[in-house]
Picture 1 (cartoon, rainbow, N blue to C red):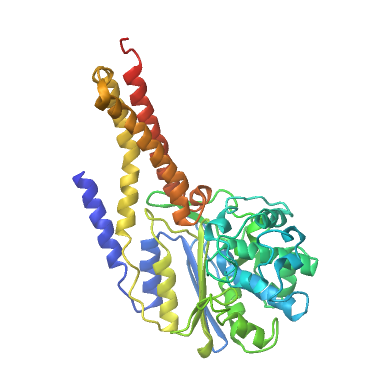
Picture 2: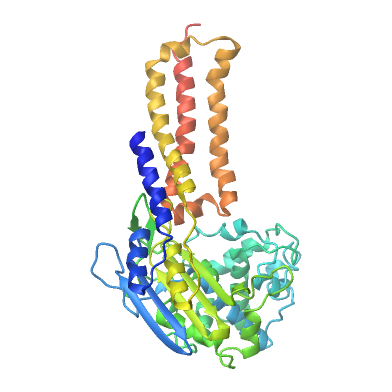
Length: 468
């Protein structure tokens, strides 16, 4: 136990030390990649229309296949800004209306509780759908061409948690529905519309919408797994997730996209339309526009993104025509390093922002470490119960029966909390937790299941062979 506490103390000290700022981009990359365990990173800076880019590391752990300026990464929820841009194109073309109800375009919403939600509310995350509802389909990795339509049909039957237009809550459900609106309004599959009307016109020649096929030039994602990162053995994003997080892009292509968003010109979208996307959407959404988070105090427009094994950050300061994008091929994990500090420090370096590092994650690490010990304790307790079976069989009376049966109630309750309550707190079903952080999912599942097994084993030992 003393050794365990010493290791935990070192983890905490390391986390605090990681907040120390450095001056050069090479120092930031070296320190941040070592701390986070990220195999590869690509970044690009836009300043006055000029693009500077850099990269470090490899596409896959254990390989010598280096990240290049043309290596695509999944960009996660940064994809929402692309979906919002496509919606605004259709609005300017007269095919959609920002304040029209979704039921006007999608028949499956007719007569449903969500039917009155407007397109503006979907764009701004004020539809009333919750984060949990938006993540319920996260583990659906179907690659069928109708995967998005089926997911949206399921959402049509769901009742929003909040009254539409009254509360801001981030939800992937909003952008899944917007993706389906793009399909119905344009008559094209989501990927085809985005390729023809957004990616190619923006000069994003090395980027694409994920379609289930793994292209060899694309970086391999790496998920956290107990003090390390493990490469994805398969594609872990379904086609139904395209509008919320299915864009695959290079850092250079992303820089071109960000430059276009800030150029104040009529091109893919009118200058007024782009400006609207980067302003508060409504009173319920003061810090979110259409597909972009807003930091009015610092004049920043940004969005982060995460897919299983990938994390990204795109940040603009439109007033200065400056932007930075950072792409990594690893996910964050309590046991194996967070990429947040790496992405934020690179961004702060190029935008000359004050950055004091991330808060210590010691508390979360300690909590998960305790949970990781519980399965071991349960197994040892079963051995103890077998050795003390005579004592257990001798228990009688109210207190004796209570000591035998209460652990069953307690562990069943704990399992319910882990599989039902904890996912609600995370805003994601247990299947999504396992997908993004398999080590955390394994620890939680082992704790829940072995707790109940221990209690039932103990009870069985006590009553098996008991004299009448």
